[in-house]
Amino acid sequence: MLCRLEDIKCRRVNSEINKQNVVILILESFGLEYLGPPYGIKSYAPFIQELAEKGRFFPNGIANGRRSIEAVPSILAGIPSLMSEAYMRSPYQSNTAYGLGEIVKSYGYSTAFFHGAKNGSMYFDNTTYRFGFDHYFGRNQYPDPSHFDGQWGIYDEPFLQFAVDELDKLPKPFMSGIFTISSHPPYNLPEQYQDSIPEGDIPMHRVVRYSDMALRKFFESAAKKDWYKNTLFVLTADHTSDNFDPRFASSLGRHQIPIILYQPDDNIEQGVISEVAQQIDIPATIIDYLNLPEQDKVLPFGRSLLTQNSQADAVIKEEDSYWLLSQGKYVKLSMEENVPVEVGDLPATFMKPAGQVVQADLGQLERRLKAYVQIYTNGLIDNSLYSFSSENTQ
Image 1 (cartoon, helix red, strand yellow):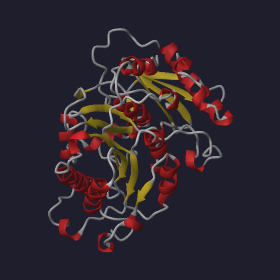
Image 2 (spheres, one colour):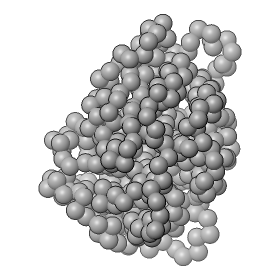
Image 3 (tube, one colour):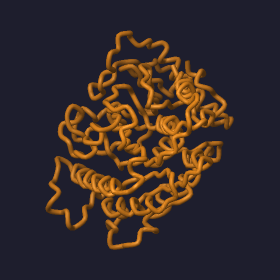
Image 4 (tube, helix red, strand yellow):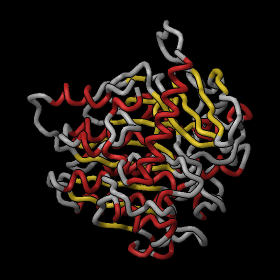
């Protein structure tokens, strides 16, 4: 596998840099199960589903970790979460790492990250600075304290409108990350929505509905800006949260998130893509989309989601084991000694790969998983992650 960087090189020949804006929207706790059929039981996020239908949608999306602090390094720098501790709390946090903000700045981009919680929450301000985002907008920068939810931060609806206004002020082109907060305990809603947003089957459903509505209003406001049609929007979640649908209450189901690429001017291929996709694919995807000659700053774990790949992978750590998800199968490698490798079919919550005729080579998948783990472990210890080429995981 992993001819992905070669694919990027092939498309880049005789091509100019595509200086479009990029907005990465990280939706707090938006599991795939909150979408309606054929994914979840009932839709609690109708606007997200509308965008999925208009964009390039990966329903087999995977969160590489289970915590918000793990999601940001995965999404902004392509770093998997294969340790017990989060990367930004580990001894390796000062290792060489190329974040998206750092990569695009040399091409004239301005960069900003938005998160409505108090500055310092989960180290997001330091983490995003670390990955090259020059400006950070948190609760401390928000001008109206009356929009505080009482515990966590600024409600999504006003904060997302604030983000639109601040993006409009940035020199173009820009790259931005925006992390929502309202679909997080204690599940508070603004007073004006207490009666109009109905309860769901669990408390999480109501705040998902609110955040989805706030996101719709964000896009309505953004659509009025000159920069809107020249912007790639990447939508994903940090991790999953409370399960209502029992089908998702599994080791793998708890990692299932939507991943959507949406470009208002329709300059990317649309459709529902049944391949596995993961958060750590996002940096490679953006570098590919912008046509940047920065292959050496892409880690060997992710791929561009603009290129279909029948052997696409996702790699996670769960249950004190490493897992590889690929071609409708999983391989589970225990971190304990003398535990047999486990293989099997992905749960029914995963869309089956389209047009797959050749059966997956389970031996090859096992070797690939072990290669990923070896590259990750040795790369962290030796600070050599960027020394590995894509061929190391054949």
